[in-house]
Length: 633
Image (tube, rainbow, N blue to C red; front, top):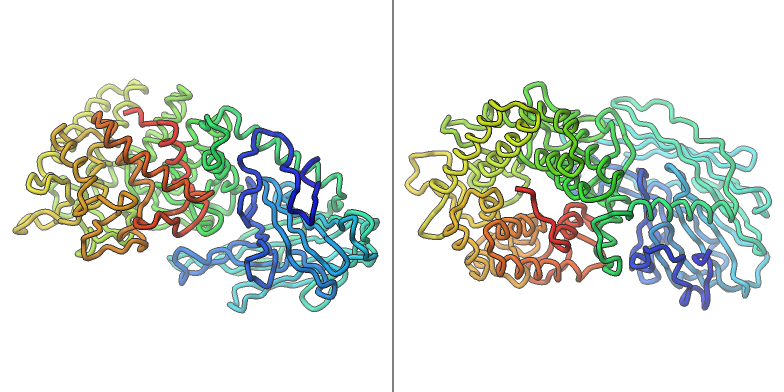
């Protein structure tokens, strides 16, 4: 297998097996996980400046943590060479199934490879190069304590194996305490050891023979509980791997990836970002967890957003998965099930679902309905429509019954529930959102199609009438002819100026749902080149560059969010504004290709990725925009 061949301490290593995945090989990445895993491994490069060259990360968060710091090192180092050997990290090579670090030591070169080998288990393979003059290789790994009181580690040893038990405390934003328990059995085959594994303080140590390749295997069991932490489960007694089994595990990961990419929406396997985008759907998938994730969950990013799944993220992810093969379709349907499983008794669909609890907020209607429609359309699956129709209807009615405080037929929301958490459009409080009205119109339109498919003619007619009424209201009352722009409305109908004059890309969502006239669509499109609205070095800024709230890298107050660019592109295409749509698409894709992975959002002056890397809905919309995948409405 070519992935184990090195030259010059790893600098001219062969590129890996020929699999059709070559565009993913040797990328500048320090992170690896795999489908199902609830952990990730970081293996840094020689210029990182960190004291620990590699570590295992797991979920740890509290209600004091907002978006970042949700994963922390729990085993660090995962495997470290004895400092007495004088080793210096020389190179790192990344493949989608393993990472390798190469060290230059006093007595020669040593390669250390990291890979997931099935389930939650992972292993580290250690091999001395032929030029290595030593007899043995000292190694160690350590349970980590970051000092915040949320992680406890206990170690024990018996019969040449080390047992590590960890309890991690988790708090949700709404104060629910839970614990995740991890248990590791750390072992190596006797014929791969000079000195068996033993304990030294919070670390294990061992000596490996330099004349053969050794593998240290971590067998992992995990459990969770709300409230008081129970006993940590014992890890699997399975035998540790040898070098051949390590290679076989890598080949199994390659076969999984080949199956994942079969019949995928990626049409150009030479485009690294297309390949990375579809790969991320696989890597960011986690096994069912706790009482609230009954199915596999594609999280927004294992790097930063692994505490929960969000409604509109789940919907957009499912829409992209609808264009994949059978396993992608099944995974897409499971994203919807994970949200619907936590629907409140009054019909509200939750904004976010953590493994052990569901949030009290909400997010845009229509997106899950769009996802079901896409999945059912490609599968011609009436059963899928029937499965979700009742929940989607209840969710729609919840908005009508609970978010219209003045009874004028226009629903309202705040910044958090809109998904645009810090947008200046909410600086003065809740609004009658033009995007919310548009999403409700789309929801009604798609529910009409579902009712038709289920033979519910009367319901279909009622939904269709509601959709048309909402669209008429948008073009007649949310449109400011003086600015040529769709705006939110103030809830107070007696205000001298009824508009919330904060231009944002949500002005394009009426185009997405077909609520605008052709003249209105042309007027909004003309603002793409206007710095008072949407012109920027890298469009679309989430607030105008000339506005007082603008900050190029401040969340929803200036950066580019790919979801908004994609929705605007869909809307422009919907009105046959191809010149403007093509320009926006070209500029968006060019900006995204500046990085080897996708990002949560982007600086609108530099194009630099910001926030979480490996971000899922950016990956989803990159594929849609690259391969001209537009909505079926």
